[in-house]
Length: 276
Image 1: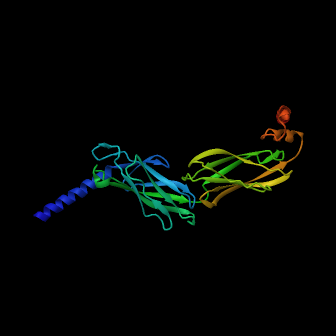
Image 2: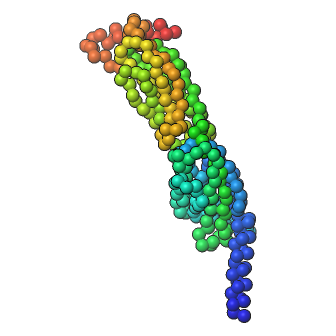
Image 3: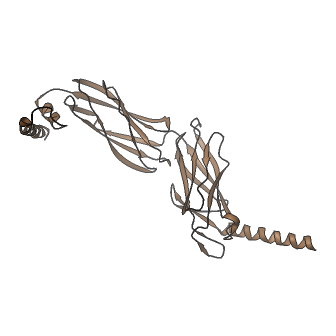
């Protein structure tokens, strides 16, 4: 009789936990908003090989009776990640719980899956747990680039300003590196962030002090994976001339006696007239 009562009590606990899990839910807030229940599935979209991304849920939820809990979920746990992938569970007891996942940098193109489990520590809120399967498509084709202008004429030492628009169609917020090859002495790399599912314009500035025509290549690549990259051909002509020389005067301090500075200011204004 004693063992029968213990079994009944255990069975009741299992039924309560199962019922709680069936009615409990998780509110995913990143990389986009959706609600998922136990044994549900989520397709995130695209991520590049080696690019870190996050799945974030709100800790707030409700139990099977409709009672609200601001910190109902206490941890988001990762399991079943493919071999070679790196994952990290969320921090504990925060308003938003973020699990971190990084596909292998050598992962072949394809669709992969792993599991996420929202845990209510000790089941004190009678939420049970919610486990759902996450699918993600690994591919280097996660962004596009638009560059303008592609032909520039500047004076020696004058800034060549290029506008780079990155459209990030993936789920990762990892940085992009912008660099240029083809100039005699310019090799600056700038890191920028275009958030997932957004388009953003950046300014890249290059300089060349030696007159000539330079057929350069602008490179945009993921900071986490050289496999994820785009290129654009840009022609930069540096020519000496009155207009370009006057423009160069406006690019920085003049290393001449201060008595000549008003003249340089007038010359710079003249250069603006040449451009309009």
